[in-house]
Image (cartoon, rainbow, N blue to C red; front, side, top):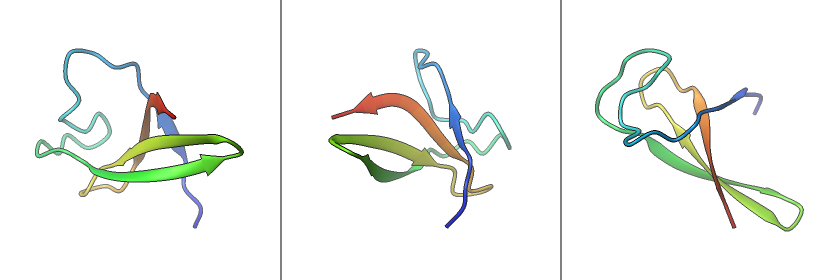
Length: 56
């Protein structure tokens, strides 16, 4: 599945999609890159994928 990951600097809250304005939160996904696991967020409305910098 091809998709672009948009990097977002975490502010006080991340609830509204910066791409389409959807206001009811996000779905989660996890992506492994070597030993790193990234926690990414998907807008349920426009399906854009966002990276807030959460990693394990």
